[in-house]
Image (cartoon, rainbow, N blue to C red; front, side, top):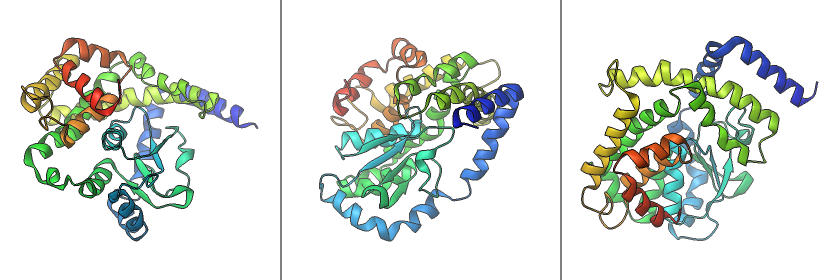
Length: 298
């Protein structure tokens, strides 16, 4: 049976089992992802990483060659914002989310991941692990100890990510829209794109309903009956007012790690209706425009 036919059959099967079956697939993959922790994996790469990190510190060109990511992964967005702002050279490898064939050489299966030195190089994984490892090499180690920087980085990682996930997956149609980005990548086969949309959208819809929403309720950030869009916009405005205020950036005249983390998370939904609605309905637009200019993303 051809690969296309196998994928088509899998897509049909997923459609039959419905959202519950798709969510079960997601939970099974979570168990697989936990088989190796980011900390243990990075520790295993430490000796091989040392020469590559030394080249980053010296700002030698081509010291970092491959960044493995999903366009719509907020944690990947954090790493891309960091690399782009500090002009660390890298080639972006778009990973196909369902089968992750691009990650076959790596024992660790979550994103983002960096690979130094080409196809045989060392790996560095996990968004905070990546940023926290590279930051001291760039002379910004003090930001890792700044309580206000860490407060807003934590907010981006724990709260903002969940509100973004909840809002872009609030309906099946919105979740489907979140996968339109894959149409721009010729490296992802058509059959995989179809499978991803048919199966991936229901999975993310179920994740939002069964995991993200209860987590936000437990954290006291949502109550039954709250309008998810309104609360998301309130969260964004809180960052704009408390973290940025009258400054250009949280970091003052230049972005700091808090700015980069928040910006990166929000870039994961750029192009989605939820992103446009956020720009039009909150006060974050001027800060976002300044961040675009700082990162050369205009």
